[in-house]
Image (cartoon, rainbow, N blue to C red; front, side, top):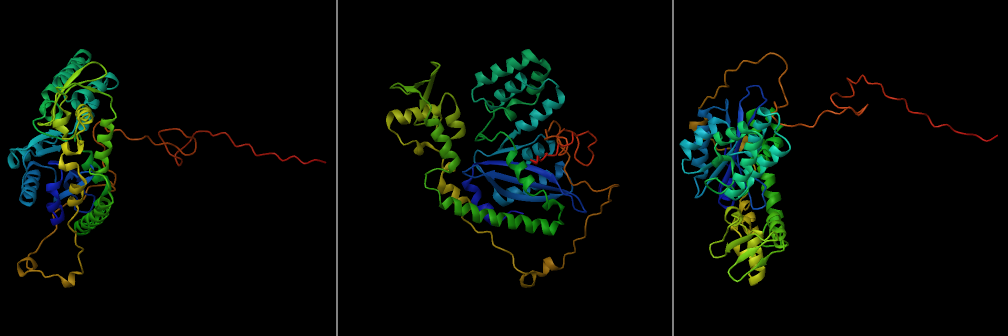
Length: 392
């Protein structure tokens, strides 16, 4: 399912598609596959949905084929997902020209499960290696990992840094390093996944209808040139104190020199060309030359593009009695899939991923962790009743 409003708004989003799958909890089970994008304000922009029996190579390939038929492809397209082999298989067959990246949060979860010492310095070095813009910084963090845990260094090299490292990525991820946007959408439709397929599809359409109306109205209220989050980011870059020479060599507080080319929109720190928004060094040049920094921001961050994302209307669906259904569709007989219900009570909560952290249960009676009030057996001191004194 790809609504026309999503199709028409997709060209105004950054060319990055984030995909993920979530299990359906209704009688016939299955998986709900979702493809999302980022609007100018960094919010979820739903693109398409698909319902499949399971997350297999064939299911993901079918989903990406339908996705390409609906929204086509774009120049410098990047696709971010978890490490499921079926997704990479489908991307290589359907979007061979797209840059494929994996979620660094899922990779960190795998490292936490595989290596018990993945905390403290090791986690800091991994975060630095995955999010650094410069190759020199990437190699410095990787050498630190090699010194502490050579086996983890070997594992990360085999995981292919071109997929999880910002410095080696063969495209532009626009600072989108995780699949959190798709995970957030899965959290939104958590209760809807208990519904039958027909009600689930209508719930998704109604959700998009509400989002498009609310965000279109919010975009009309914006008074700045950029979306709020991009405006906040560029003002943060502007506040960094740097000195500029005539040749646009920017000197930082630690005496490091960065070369900025405003005509090519590049900086040796690589943030300018990767994120497509002026870095602190480019902002220093704009301040020195009295240049409008908004002219050097990608259109994907502007309020006009934010409004254009939600300009189309998601139309409501009336009563089925008024539908004009063709004879070809009405004569089709769709039988439910053959399923066998497993033993026990159906599971409602999803199974956590490997290494995923959850807040531990806390008892409301004794304030201890690991159990709740109903199963609490700890002794709790009695409250002293206030004594009242009467003068005689």
